[in-house]
Image (cartoon, rainbow, N blue to C red):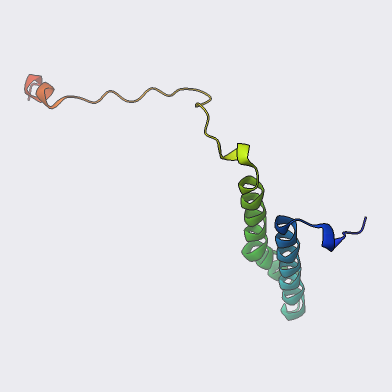
Length: 94
């Protein structure tokens, strides 16, 4: 399945460009890795660049969907801790 870059949305174009930049950083890591350390260097490049790429795609996807911005009620209410009043301090024994 080939992509028709003329029909991609701005978010899709950004994701494609980001993916190419990540791929280039991986290829550079392979080329410059010392003998016996190729996978280590590629994994390091992936951690440095790949997660940013995924984070950017996630942000673009969420930002493009109006309903994703709505805040709803908490799935399960959590009671707040009961705070002591300063007047209770005099009731404590030393």
